[in-house]
Image (tube, rainbow, N blue to C red; front, side, top):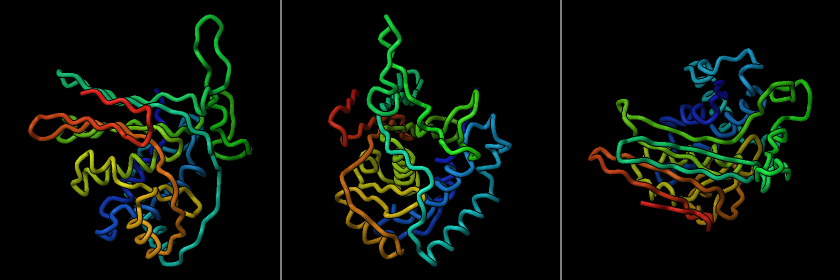
Length: 267
């Protein structure tokens, strides 16, 4: 099994201990998001086709460089540039656990709607359209090549504490998955929010170019981002997360995002 390069863990490490206004804790992750998205869209692809070590990408040297980039960007705010847009969404995610402590965080995606709009005869299996996730321009990290896997947005995440399960999370929502999962982790692990509080809190998303898209209801985040010099646009709520949290007393809490009407939550 070949692992894809770690964009979302890199974002979490870059954000870790980042000073953000206490009233708008998420606003401090906008600049790190832009920096790590630039790494993802210009340097990352199938590791089998790159001379890049995924372990090095989470090393202190790269994180320190990205933090310097963030500081420079915050000192001289700029809108950035679009590198490789991808408007397609169409994903589902489940988190589940049993009494024996077995846990699963699973994402399944066809891309947009019905994927490639083709099915295998007599099976009912609809083919995806993963080719759309390649960069069609030659000479780039994520350009098309034989036997190569494209970048994807799926981000099923498993966190442990002392070797035991702590927090299982993942979701749907195209490229916003990376931002949404990071917001959930930061709020639960760093800001001591309950899983439900973290799930319901307003989110924002930004890649390499602004404006930063903030969910409706995120007025405090908008204020915090503008104070930091970001361009901001408020819009409808996006994405859909599912999470399971293992508390210290042994209890298990499952949380299902209500941003989509087709969310299912069993306890």
